[in-house]
Length: 323
Image 1: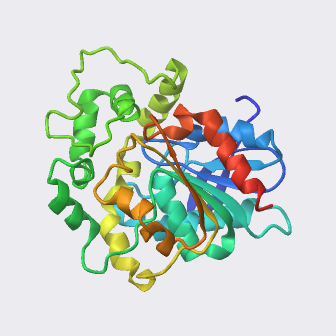
Image 2 (image 1 turned 45 degrees about the vertical axis):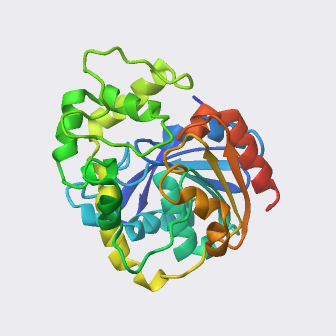
């Protein structure tokens, strides 16, 4: 880990913290919630040792990246975040290198889909995890649709009111909130009822996932105690605004080579309609260069940490075919 280099890069009117290691073709790693660049630590080391340059930023609102107006969720649309990443790509790529490989997970996967949709000229190939492409439905705003499907206790709906869920997180404690997210392995939607949350008591001992060390949780906790959760939650709060702004891409396809990986216990894979979309032709229709879908058995949402060696090998094998 001490080999990983850290720097700040001025992009798109924010100061982005970037971790990087290695030389060779650039891989841009995009994290999700509640994650940081650190979620890719295993892949950074593996891919850097196999002839790649791994670049992993803290996205706007996260970690050591500064300058984003966290009090304004309208500044956290996919257009803003993709703008950050395009500026980062333009800044960090080697001379003569105009495209990068991209790897995403969770919200990072959603941002990666958007990057490929808005700027396919910047992406050689994509490995995305957990969240499949979600074509824009011109009839329904996403928050309205999710509320109708799952009700007001569904976690994304609970995240909508600024300050509300942050107040509950403060009562539960940062380390406990993070650990509850990392430990979630039910193949079912996540509900966070008011006053109940994950259903654990503040007095319960913190039991780490098998794949996470005490030091890992302490790192995440130290960063989220400094920044709070609002930056990451703003991505959810901008979902309807994303829908309003992306009308021009209704019906557009993602036209870059893609490998998709998901765990069979992942809540996203088990959300309503997801399996049918992935397995019965919808995914391939919207992502015509979808090369392969890999479903890992007995694996949850944070698959790149839980099965980091296997995931690193999947990434390496797929990207090698596009050098």
